[in-house]
Amino acid sequence: MSGEGHARADVAAQASPNRVRIIDATLACLAQHGTLKTTVDDIARQAGLSRATVYRAFPGGRDEVLAAVVDTEVARLFSALGVCLGEARDLTEALVAGIVEASTRLREHAALAYLVEHEPEMVLGHLAFDEADRLLATASRFTAPFLARWMSPTEAGRVAEWAARIVLSYAISPSEFTDLTDPGQATRLVETFVVPGIRALNAGGAVPLIDITPFGFGRDMGARPPEPVIRLPKSADPPTDRLTTDRHTNKRHAGQHSTSTVHPKGDRT
Amino acid sequence: MDDTRQRILEAAYACVARWGLAKTTVEDAAREAKVSRATVYRTFPGGRDELINAAVGWATYEFFVRLYEQVQGADSLEEVMERGIVFAHRSILEHEVLQRVMQTEPEKLLPILTVESNRIREGIAGFLVPYLEERGVAEGVDPKEASDFLARMVISYMSGTGRWDLEDPVQVAQLVRAELLAGVVAGPEPG
Image (cartoon, rainbow over all chains, first blue to last red):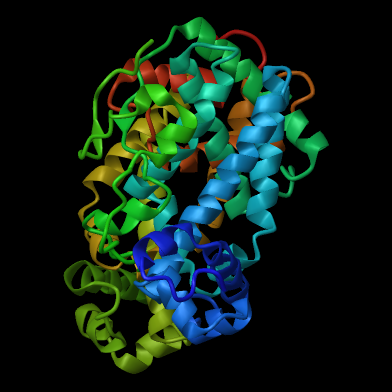
């Protein structure tokens, strides 16, 4: 491997093409054995690399790889969403495309499915109460700018959060009425329930959004006490650029990260 | 529910409140309920796990009994939803046992709550169907599907308020009329 034998290990580790290979190998391991039974040896074997190479790319070992897997999968989801939201020609199309894309990716995610089945505590913590708020905030911060083509930023924030709620609800417990991975059924749900709701939001006048700090692609997850749910590590060396999420989404939010979880602060309208 | 079962569940819940989910044993619940271990096992043949799940289910049921009382006498579907959401939001914030267990043993509680949430959704949906039928649903809307959608949204706002301020009646009114009911009901709000 080209990264091996280089003295500047830190730089090489960040840039290493092995990172993606290791992350994809880890996903395959997680889909078979979950987090508890996956070792660095398993990951190395699956990737066809040596243990030493894995540690060179991820000096923190297994925990660092797992954190990077979360980061990468969130980034992949958002990047796919960015493409389909960007291509949409009208609001309904954007909502349907985003909902179908996210629902399909969540349903077909083999590693996620294994964890939900065998290690639910790894996943469920992010779906309830404060963590749910952060998840929703992250999703809506990313998708809202795409919707702002058709409405004010405040409304777009609301609608993006709403769409994220819908995706999560139908992903967590499939409905006997609606399969949101099916474009026809998703269109029906959006046209029946969501579009009239957006009109009503519009007519009601925008009420301010509460500001919630989204998490930055998983990296922050271990750094927020109390955090007993997900056993991802505190990153020993937190990334200097904590604004990854925002940089890809909405430049206006760059630098607005606050440490508090929730504080009443109106979004710009 | 027979008296013994009720008493054991209340006792188990009291033990969970005191010691948490992991440390509550069948012996604790038996002592608290003043029944024998054998009686607990006869009532809950699955033992500790069944008892703990049933205790969480019982607490959830109690919560919905109070929720049901809260929305009695509401004049409209809109008011039912408003009262229900505000009550559920406050009750969760003020629920000491829930908050403590969520802090200390979320990995034990959340899987149970996730199973419960399916029952909760069916319960809320079933509760809403007659209100929807009385109010009248929009053209092309199936009351059962609409009530399932509404129940999902109610649970979503109970689980996380997101960027809504549910302490603000103006926001609650808008949430209910836009994201919950706009596509569901027929015609303007009565009154």
